[in-house]
Length: 266
Image (cartoon, rainbow, N blue to C red; front, side, top):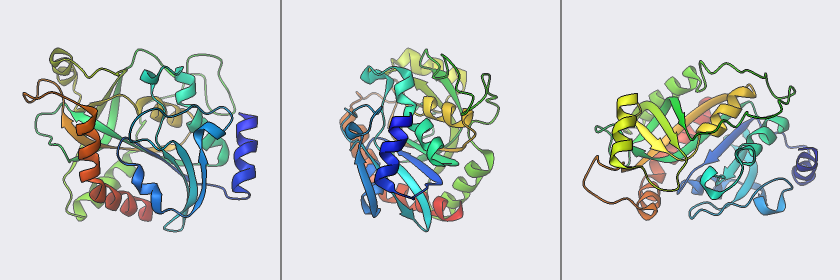
């Protein structure tokens, strides 16, 4: 961690980010217009390499609407074979750099039959079915408590504000529970039916580890899912990552408008 922080600070000088953003599949274009410092993950000590299509794999430091931000253009996933501790390492780095609010985005499949591809969902809570917890192991008391409370992982005020901003923009904004599975295979129809019974509205293969650790670190968390497809069994069609990226690209303008409105308010 010390080596990572020293490397990054040499690149960004006295810049201290207050807001962090993690951009999911097909949503990375948001950071393209940010003027600032860009650092490839593979050049940062302690960071892994992003291997998923649609993830540029770099940290972007710069100002957005006058707010100092650090943006992850792409993330690491459990299914890429990385240890869970490596997936959440960037969140801990953000905390050490000064980030107080973390906005996490993802591409997700709809479990709720009323949701459609292209909808945006503000995450109100999650169900961790990845089979692992990123806090397992020796605790770093400089970051958080050994047994952190998870009553409000996703900040209620931020979620309410994001929904109101989206509706004011005329966007279709849902709110619901996000279920995380390990992947990389998509879920079976039976698994989706299980998730629906459990109360999930959307499903994906990310976000929960990062949100869990951000909350542990004392950050305010806002989670937003871009519903890119119907999960298995919801409609009689096969699933593909191409569809996920294409749908995210189709709604990226709406998504960016929402992010800008949220950032302006924070």
